[in-house]
Length: 124
Image 1: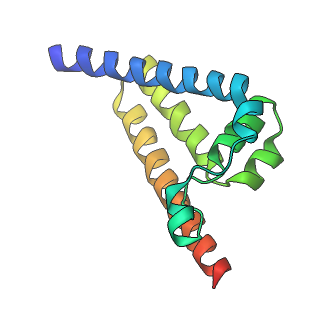
Image 2: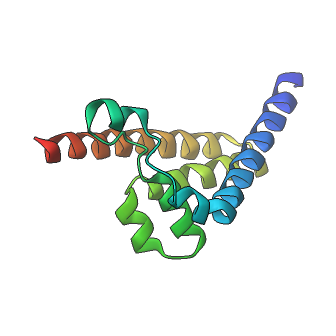
């Protein structure tokens, strides 16, 4: 039982960190947009990593511009689904919630892989 309580606190902290990060992106996006690309992977390989565009996608999502968010990085949909599943697991830590969270995580990882594969194929 002790492990479950600690695990739940960890998930609540994770959710709060993600929300705080999203608020920071919302507030500081004009400043972020004025600075050059910070992706080390793109600087070395010339190919955007699976998470490239995610900051802009989160900003667009927070302004309710869903299609623009999808254009920056299509994986944003699955990040939202995973985040919702994590919140559901904190609210209702049942077996079904764990299955939903695991499916959302698998879909998120698969979508990141597809985004990366598309970016590689687009360059070649």
